[in-house]
Length: 138
Image (cartoon, rainbow, N blue to C red; front, side):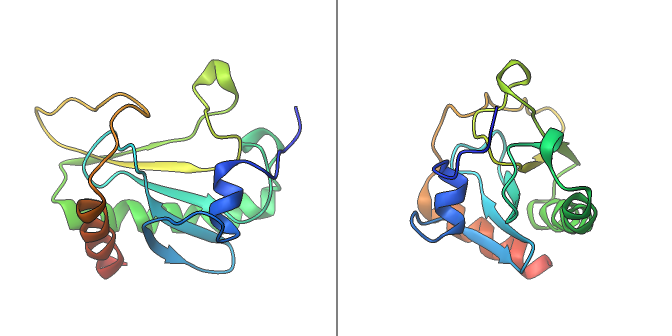
C-alpha cells in the first residue's frame, strides 16, 4: 500500500482542518485526539509523509521518538495519570485507521478502563484546556 496525501492527518498538517495543537516544530505536530481513549490522549504526528512505521525513514523515527518521550512525561504530569501507554498501529489488521504515521500517548489511571478507539468524541473546550495544560508541561 502507498501513502495517501489526502488522509486526515496530512490535511491537518497542511492547515486544511483545525486541531487542538499542543506543540509543533519542524519535525512533528502534537495534538489532542478528538476521540480519546483516556483524558489527555495525545497524538504525535511526524510531518514527513509515511503510511506507518513500516515505510518510515529511520531518521524521522530517530528525530520524533525524543518528542514522544517528552509528550508522555508532560501528559502524565498534566493529567496526574498513574501511567502512560504509548501505542502505534501498522495496517488495518493491527488497528490502524489513519494511514499517516502517528503515535498515541494515552494517560492511564488506576481503576479506570481505557475507552474504545475512535468511539466517543470529546468536548472541544475540555480538549483545548488539556492541550494548554500539556503544552505548559513541555
